Figure 1: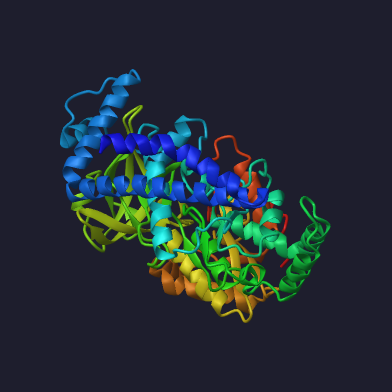
Figure 2: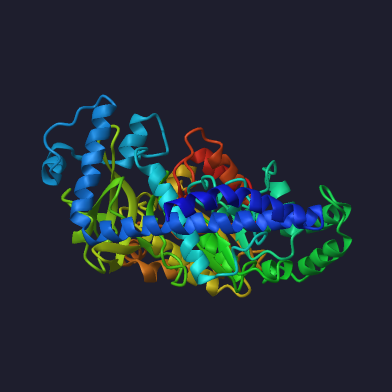
Length: 530
């Protein structure tokens, strides 16, 4: 048997070369070779993903042992980096010796560093696992979407946490070699009407792409017609022009009639962009994220593309993960955490990750709700970030509570569609002089050009309905009426450019819903139109 295997390995390359030479034309040879590379890559990916799936199943069935091993690896990593661990690798001993640290404190200690520390050890493996399993489950749910030439990425950043290693790179056809700029990527995608998958780094980046496409659609169509770059495609340019004339609703499917799936990487503050895209430009399409990224690392895996967007498995590997109970939008009075196997369905917890370099147990501020279990590991949805709560008089208006109230209010504004929003406490802009402290709310809308007092009153009513503490403070006059400002098109794109320009900006960039810095708030204030 071994002899036959060796003989096959020796004969296979010359046989393939002979078949390639027998093909009638160079185009046919290239097409056949690309198809062969694609098949070989999928075979390799299937094997690698099956191995990762077996490891994941094993670790989630014995989650206590898996977390103990993850902690041991963290301690070994700290020892190698010159930070010798104190005590044993026992979880309870580790928790007693290393107190919890808030992400805000780390930010202060690092001179305003936006990113909380995460583990580099093991993150490469976690990134690759999310990518391999994500591609596999996406292919299983939509078998035809990952065929050769069916994928295009329209942003320089990729939604897949890890680049594919050789020989899997034949599958990475989302961005052509040498094509890196966002304009060139979008132009290449527009030239290909048969796309089935559209990729972008994050949903907010994709929202910016569609807003720019809608604003400058005529120039894009002319570029396709002129063949800049590539061969001129006048018929395709005419198709693009006709699609753009139909308006934003369903634009993606008019541009690419075979399109089925939009792939972006989920992280904090992306839900609003996903909702706006799904209601307008990407109406009728499935959204998929291979994982959830927080503080620069992948902390959740998406194994269920057929389920509603936003369900993730918390794996038991590195980074070592703990869960801190949260009650009614605030942290508990104690710092007593639970491990993954102890998470209770329906309960909310703040994520706590341990950095193996410095053994920092960091409370990220990301709050998850447990909705189920896979073996012994929790299946969760990310609901809000503690650092994005509003509190001008101690009312502690949580991120998800405010966002839901705003969505209900906009739903009562005839013709309006919410694209993006940000809040600022009045003290940041010094706008409370002569009045009670209040919220300054900046919104970008589609379908409404001016805000009336009636529109603004409806938001305040929705906020009072959503938060009893806010309602009580409003009744007593301790908190003033929320002031709503409509900003012009492109305002939030300018804000995101200002955010990503910061040297410490993480990827994916978490979209803030509450601004704490006056200079960023003034970016919005200067663009108010109503």
